Every structure is written in C-alpha cells, then in structure tokens.
Image 1 (cartoon, rainbow, N blue to C red):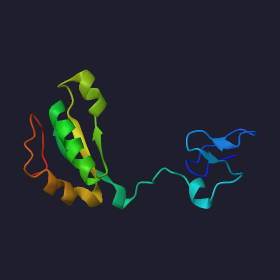
Image 2: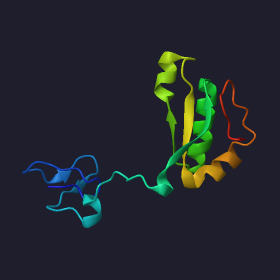
Image 3: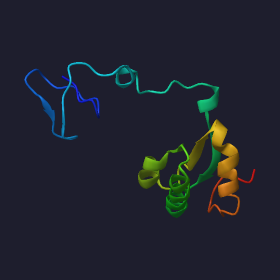
Length: 119
C-alpha cells in the first residue's frame, strides 16, 4: 500500500496515510515511482561562487538565495561550526544560475573569504 501524496509505502493492513490524511492505494502513479535523485549532467553541475569563514555571511547568503528560489549548497557549512577558521564554507551554485547569483551578490562584502562572486 502506498500514499498517493507523499509516496510512502505501508505494510499490508494499513489503509490511510496519517501524515497526508489520505487513503492509500495499491500502486503509485508512474511519476511517483521514478527515482527522486537527480543525475548530474551539464545543466546541473554545481560550481563554486564564493567562500567565507564568517557564519554571519553564511546566514545572509542563505536568506538571499532561499528568497529567490536559487538551488545551491554550502560545502563545509556544518563543519564551520566545529572547525571554525580551519576550512572555509564554499557556496556552490547550479551552473545555469551562476549569472543570477553573481548579480544578487554583487554588492555583498564577504568577510574573510578566499574568493567572491565578483571574480
């Protein structure tokens, strides 16, 4: 049994998804059964845009990019809290969104970074 909304699989005997509050179905539609992992190709390559050691910079960058719906990840973000100034956090942006991000961050003054969006 499957939830037609979230795709969760349930054991025999369950008839309702408690998370989505919908009835379960025997089989998911074709689109729900596809692999949710996106294979990396040329359009989905992530490239470095800037780096920083400053946790305030990280918070501000995330806020700006989240607000614009930009797909990104911050390499080393979690270790920044543990390792401090040993390794920078690097903003990685999808290849097809680089120009947009550089424009959004053009006036952004990165504190203690190795490279910035203006390069």
